[in-house]
Length: 283
Image (cartoon, rainbow, N blue to C red):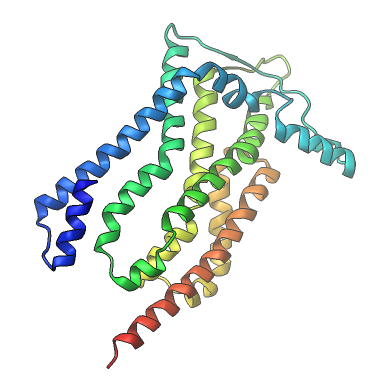
């Protein structure tokens, strides 16, 4: 905190920080961010048994929230194919230290998820003083929007994408005589990759904001290439969902398309702000 106060005083006095001073400032922000990650990782490891049973292993059981909702939809619409009331596979640990190593990795991933808002806030505190007044105005609430989009993406990946992908891949059989028995490592890795990938993909409006600010894209360009963007979204959905299940890809494509449309409004907002800045600077 003392470093932040010194930085503010120096900028108010009109002096500038040296390169080494900036590195020192950045170092302390990174140290605090890493410390937050370690704290949440340790807390997750302490409660790892409850987390595994209630959260991580949730999509592997037919009583998971998503499967129950699909069964309700199937009952209302008569489309019984949507109901998932059985998952015909088994998870096993085939290495001596497999479960312990997975506990460590899972605790670290959970620590990253929960510490993300604070870690991003620390990095943003380092970046924000270097912005101009108008840039600080249009980036107000950046930590909130980035965190909200990331968490929405993680929840979407956990409750929608991951269960559908796990159900398809885990129940797919070439022959009924072949039993599906998977290592817990592959299950947890798939769950983590899908949830984190969705969290990062939901940052599309933030990426559009940055690219619009530096002049790489604009709302007219995004509207003009809307059809190509739709094809790209379908490709991204196919990559995120490793299963060829059409329903999974549609469920992933819809929010991505909505995010793209939101990104057009974000780009238009940035363009209006840049025009206002240019008019204010014109004598």
